[in-house]
Length: 148
Image 1 (tube, rainbow, N blue to C red):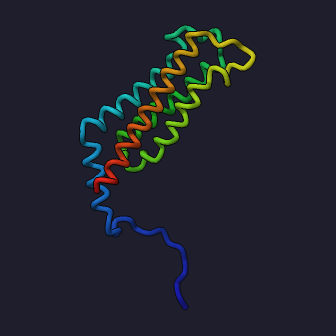
Image 2: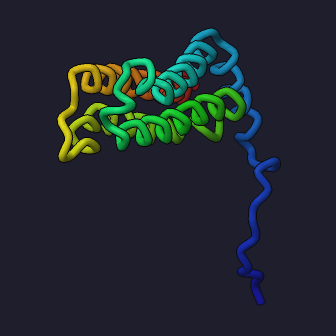
């Protein structure tokens, strides 16, 4: 009788594993990879503290909590991109979706309240920057895959 059990495969014996590792190592050793990862961490940390920098922490408690959670998440993603880039680059698309949510969040999260000009500009700029960094990181991966 044939053995049809599902066992987890060992990727160490995969024929393309060496090539995949060198491709990701080459991409991440360059200055572009380091710069993008660092900017993602900084964008996340700024987002977490932005309600106190822009002084809207008293006006919209909901947006403060939203920025804190998403900022910590983006900073953690940036750290993950630095420590395990091959595993984390799939999440750059989630970071792009987070950036889009940040752009619309002054109107979505502050329902029933009036978003101030400072809130709106802060969220739009940080959201746009987050989307730009996510697309840059994803583009670096796609470019590396196309070249090899």
